Length: 342
Image 1: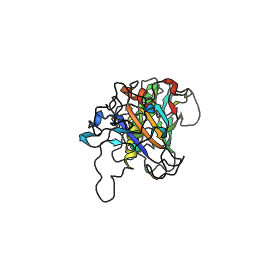
Image 2: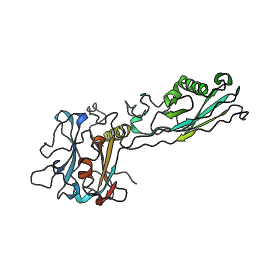
Image 3: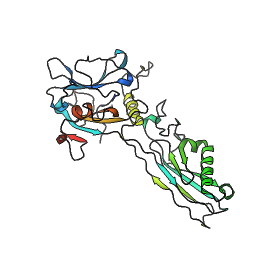
C-alpha cells in the first residue's frame, strides 16, 4: 500500500467522552486527556452527548475528532470529515505483549562435562520508541535498559556463547542454572539484552525488548553425549499484543515527527506526551477518504487518511468505545466483531 495522506494519533487517558457542554478548547491534564466527536451537523456545533450517546456513523453532518490539550491550549483535531467519507472502523482490545523467551529444563548434567549455551540473536527492535532521544519504553522487563546493539546490528544475526565447566556445575541442575545466569549477568551486553528467572528445576531466558527474537541451544562442549542428555529449550515467540505503552508512545512520537511546528531555524515547541507508562489502551482506527487534491494533504487519489485513537483500557465496554466509535449494535460488525466497513 502506498503512503497514506494524513495519519493522526489521539490518546484518551480518560474513559469519558468530551461532553456536549464542554468548549472546543477544553483543557485537561495530560493524564486525564479526553477525546470527543465534535458534531458540525447541528445548528450549534457540540460534542456528542455522553448521557445519550449516538453512534458516530448515524450523525447527519460532518464531524471532527478532538483531543484536549493541557493549559487551555487549542485541542488536537482532525480535519472536518464527512460521515459518508468514513470507509472503515477497526477496534482492537488491549492485549499485553509477550516477550520472546526460552525455557530451559535439562536435568542434571553429566559429571565433568562442560556445557555450552549458545544464543543466536535474530532480530533487533524496530519500534520508534527505541530511537527517539529519551526512548527506553520498550524494555518490557522494567529494567529501563537500552537495546545495546542499535547501530551495529547490520549482520542481522549475532551469536553469544556461555560455557559452564564440569567443575563449575558439579553435575547439579540448580548449580548449572546459577552459573549460566551468573555469566550472563556478568556480560554487560548480554545483561542488557536478556533477563533471567530460575527456580532451581528450570530457568527462563527472556528478551528484554519488544521485537527481539533469538534462538537458544544447549549442549555439551565436546559435541558428544557421554551421559545424561540435555533437553532442548522450549521457545515462546514474541507477541506484540495491542495498546501497550511502548506501542502508544511509538505511534505518538512517530506521528509528532511529522507535525509542522518543527523546523531547522528555531527550537521546537515543547509538546506534551500523552502515553502513560504502565497503562493499557484499546485501539480504535478510523480510515476515511479525502477530496484529492484539494483536501487534507497531497497524497494521490484513492489513498485513505487514518485516525488512530488509544482509549485507556479501564474504559473497555464504555459508551466511548462501544457505542460512539464502534456502533451500538453488534449487528454492525463482522464475524470477528472487531471491524466495520462502509
